[in-house]
Image (cartoon, rainbow, N blue to C red; front, side, top):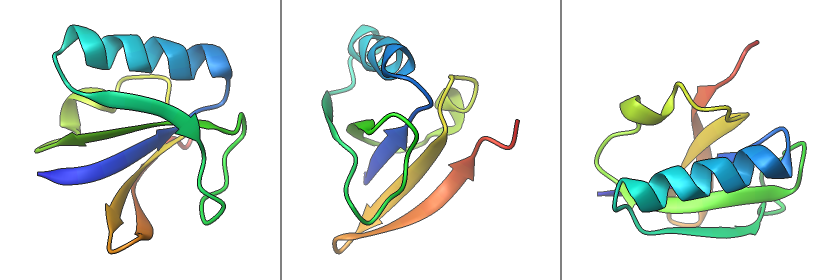
Length: 79
């Protein structure tokens, strides 16, 4: 399982994504975006899962994988 954070364009999108995670039974946490990662609204959702493919349709700004305290973008919304 990998640790991820998702960033958002708005707080509403962050709350919507957080609630979706709860519906899917995935433990998630709302928190400030780490300083190492830039984001529009300043709120992120951290979660652990095997695959992010089901979340790419959500209104996320980007999804980052966390490895040893470093964040690497694995998906970026180019719209």
